[in-house]
Image (cartoon, rainbow, N blue to C red; front, top):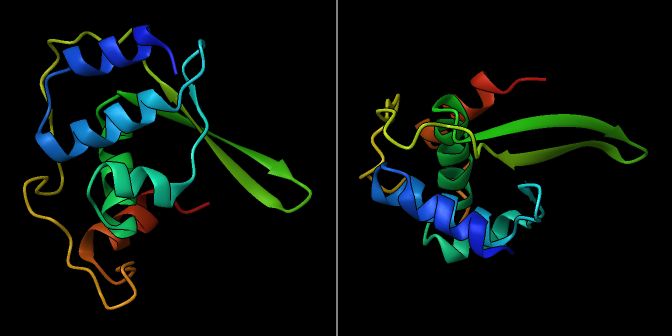
Length: 126
């Protein structure tokens, strides 16, 4: 974590839930803005479900607050998320989902059937 990453995340203008995800990512970022995290940890810090996390990550990427790179590993694929420090903080937020509505959780705590998660899958199909 760097103070610069957190300061940058805090100055961005966006709805509360995706901002919590962005702040949690910033807390896991190195000095270059690469975020090293476990999804369950970020979801817990941001008070969202795993399905909600993926939807908010997709919205953050769509709004150019984070970028994602996919690389091959011997165990499959690894997605790296990078904070977009060069983004204009005054750039308006646009959304394809309602960030004020928490995705519904199933009993396991991960709603993989939520519309937000399904949208994430459609937008990020490899």
